[in-house]
Structures are given as structure tokens and as C-alpha cells.
Image (tube, rainbow, N blue to C red; front, side):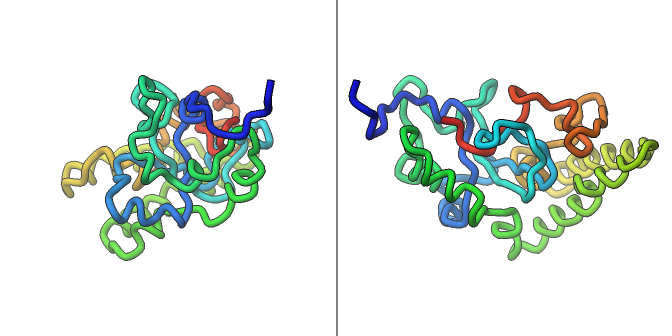
Length: 222
């Protein structure tokens, strides 16, 4: 069998989640090819499955990703019937450089020049102020500090989870913001990251409750 040297359009990479975005992808969002409702944010400190290291680990910096399709892990823009991409001409950088037969290029760039919420919202004072306030009150580093020691402050942790929930409700009710952009604006709800309010220590405040099949993937899996 001859070695693979080009894409076979099998769809394997697209079925394993949407790509993380980089600064080079900013024009795709600003130009409307990819909408904010198509994105979600993995926040600094959130546990995610890293394929290169083969483990769940807390993120060192936030990552913006394209959402998965409803009810699965495939990128929302993947057309399974045609084994193609609905935004192929406007596909993100990771998709452009991905070669499943040679991952050296994507491994070299995946940590570099990542796009952040501030890059996209920094000049939109209202939205950026909301995101920054939420991060200050519900930051995962703050949750980690409350978890330190043998006697975590469960009352404070419960208040943070309530704040996260109520801020999302208030923003949609009073501002008219599309609820579909909340996972981009504020990251995934704490109730989704910590189902049932379980606080564990292996990877900061969450890790014990996260397994590879449930953790979001942030390095392309090939």
C-alpha cells in the first residue's frame, strides 16, 4: 500500500470536533463567515483532552473553538453525507494546514497565536465588559483557590455557580443577547463543567469528574 500523501475526504478529523481558532481566523468571524453563535470558549484552567500528551489537563490559556453538531462531536460545519465542509473556502487555519498523514505542522502551531474573546470583543465595550466581569467573578483560578487546602469553601463555590447561572439568565432576559452566543461570551456553564456541583482536585477543581470521552478536545485528534 502506497503511503498517504493527500486528503482522502474520509471525514475522520471533522468527526472529532471543531478546530481551535487562531489570530489568522479573526477575519472569518469579523467578515461573518463564522458567527459568534457557532463558537464556544474553553476558559483558562478548564480541563480538556490534549491529544498530543494523551491526557486531560487544565488549559494554560483560553481557547475558542467551533461548536460541535447537535448531539455529537463532529464539527458543526461537517456534511457527513458528502464528507465535506460547509465553509470549505472559509475554513479555519487548523483545517487548512491539517495533514493527518503528517501532523508536524499543526503540532508546531496549535499553541501559537490563539484567538481570544478579547481579540473579538475588546472594542465592543458592553460585551467585553460582561465577559470580563464574569471571568473575574467565576474565573477557574478563583475556584481553584477556594478549593485549596483540606476544607474547601463550598458555600463560596455554590455562590459562584449561582452567579454563573443567574448572569446568563439576566443577560438574555434584559439585553436581548442571543442565548446561542453565551457559551462563547462566558464559556461553558459551570453546571456543565461540574455536573451536580461536584468539586474534585486531581486537575484543579474539576478533573476527577472529567474523562477523555466527556472532556472537550482542543488538539486535533489524528
